[in-house]
Amino acid sequence: MSWSKNRLPKYRKHRASGQAIVTLCGVDHYLGPYGTKVSMLEYDRLIGEWLANGRNSLLNSRHEISVVELSARYWKFAKGYYQKNGQPTGTTDAIKQAVRFLKDWYGPTVASEFGPLALKAVRERMVDDGLSRTYINALVDNVRRMFKWGVGEQLIPAEIYHALATVPGLRRGRTEARETAPVQPVVDSTVEATLPHLPSVVADMVRFQRLTGCWPAEACILRPCDLDRSGDIWTYKPESHKTEHHGRERIVFVGPKVQALLLRYLARDSQAYCFRPCDSEKKRRAAQHEARVTPQSCGNSIGTNRTRRPKRQAGGRYTTDSYRRAITRACEKHAIEKWSPNRLRHTAATEVRREFGLEAAQVILGHSQANVTQVYAERDLAKGVEVARQIG
Image (cartoon, rainbow, N blue to C red; front, side, top):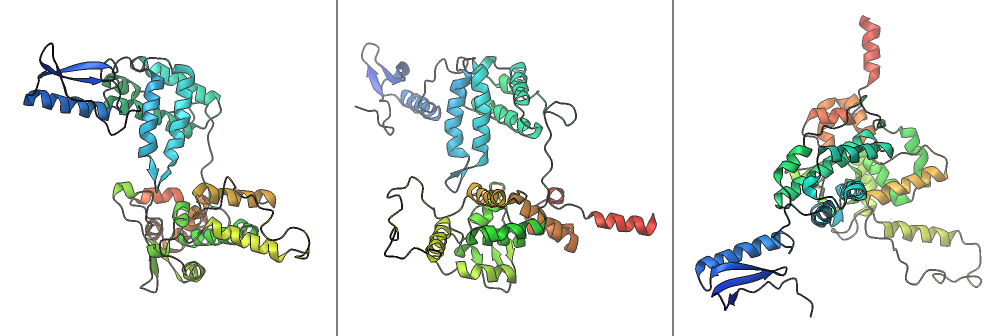
């Protein structure tokens, strides 16, 4: 008979001693005189710790758990914690990569013996594998975060995490790790050259993001119910956004051009997403049918050449990955310079800053601090040239 997840170990009486007892992971824990309030409180405490420890043994785990066991427990926690809208976030991918490096070299090592030198050795292997400096620092931070979590779960001693925290991040110009170029705005001419080769739904997503300066994820999850259309300028409040865990509100302003673009996507269930792969696939098949030259009486009839039970079907909304892949495929197929949707945000930010100033760009991008906006909105170098022309 399988053990139900909702079933708890029983509070029992040990006849030989008269004490209360509970068995956790094959280990007996004596609680005190049977039937007393003290023994019942001790039972509640042990059960609470056992559940918080993932129904694992409470004994001999703090100093003897291995790195691979710690990684497995942390991964189980991370899959449930680092997700948004039912989808895993990018943090889970980074954790998976960090754990892969740990398991290869230090999987059997006792977690309490994993110190700064071991962390530096893992980091050096990341450098040898050609990872960028900033990505390596992010992976190392995830390793430290995992050990910090282990301290909070009483799996390893606190001094291990404090020792790992002394390892500094790699600095630019002081390491052999490669540097990545900063994300630059994408030129509008490149975007315009790509649009004709995109599915119509994806092309409208690109136009929406370019005109509003929103994040790619915000374009993917747009729904009619998230739009306030009471004024001449609509406002879009995403159901979820990048900084919601900080308690901040996100508002995307929708002007006349974007309103005209969205009209064809609003006549649907208010909870349905505006930009849907299933709609794009339907339009693609309709276009194929219109371009058919074989008579209907000859060849395949409509729908007979499809897989009856395909493994993958067009879903109800785009993800940031599927959105990016659609653009990349179009660029590769038609020999256009490849670009990612996130660069549209940089392009919009640069234009707003040039025309309306840094504060306006900060509002449009939804940043709480102007120094963050500086990363997205490139300075207009033409202004510096004009100043030099006048006073230099």
